[in-house]
Image 1 (cartoon, rainbow, N blue to C red):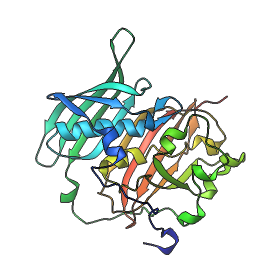
Image 2: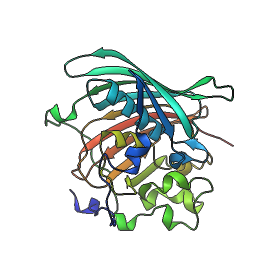
Image 3: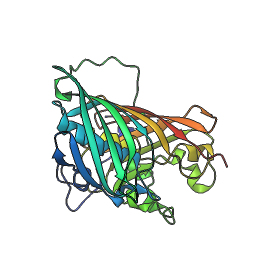
Amino acid sequence: MREAASAPAPTLAARATIGDSEFDRDTAVTRRAPGVYDIDLSAGWTIISAVNGGYLLAVLGRALADALPHSDPFTISAHYLTASQPGPAVIRTDTVRTGRTLSTGQASLFQYDEEGGEIERIRVLASYGDLDTLPDDVRTTARPPAFPPMNQCFGPEDGPAPVSGSSAIADRLMLKLDPSTLGWALGAPSGKGEMRSWFGLADGRDADPLSLLLAVDALPPTAFEIGLKGWVPTVELTVHVRARPAPGPLRVSITTRNLAGGFLEEDAEVWDTEDRLVAQSRQLARARLS
């Protein structure tokens, strides 16, 4: 790992472990019947009043990991149909195809209206495999983003006050943002669609393939550095998980090249402590222009 990117994991009284953490408990699903799962969506992963899209993707990803013969998401594409709220939800999965190295499934998450009718919130199509069986051969032109050390970056706790209504998910994350992408927080956005941050879970749990689904959608939106304000709801999000991440904090880099017609794309890369590109994503989001 390059010296400029070196940073120790946060000091914690007791580090949570994979399988025994707040993230694991809040994404746990209960199998009601084959392919049908219940969950109570936690209010701890909300932005304003809506449940974060990366957390939702991890919830659906966990259900598919149980329903399919393979446990690791390789690619997962989600369409966000209506805003999810904290509370009861049901997930219905369907196996599309199973093979020796890959299995494909789809899943939808539903919540309930005042009359008890189901409202579809999100629908995904995903292919799963076993990351541990992939060959080590890497041929790439991708390079890790240049990051200041963690002690030279800034998180929500370093600001004068949290953004109203946004602290629920922030309390569960370890975010340390690159100062060069923090102009928006000082009232002077750079005009560049860039956001970079060290990323981890606040309880110290190391990353795994399911938490990578959260990582790609957990930073402040690039729209803030473009000079826009307000909620930036996801329309579609596709994530490619490339490798099982090494222990320690991740580096997440997100860029936007094109804002047009009230929509923008966000391209994310997630790098681990061994300088490996462990996840990539692209999402289409709606931007408020006024």
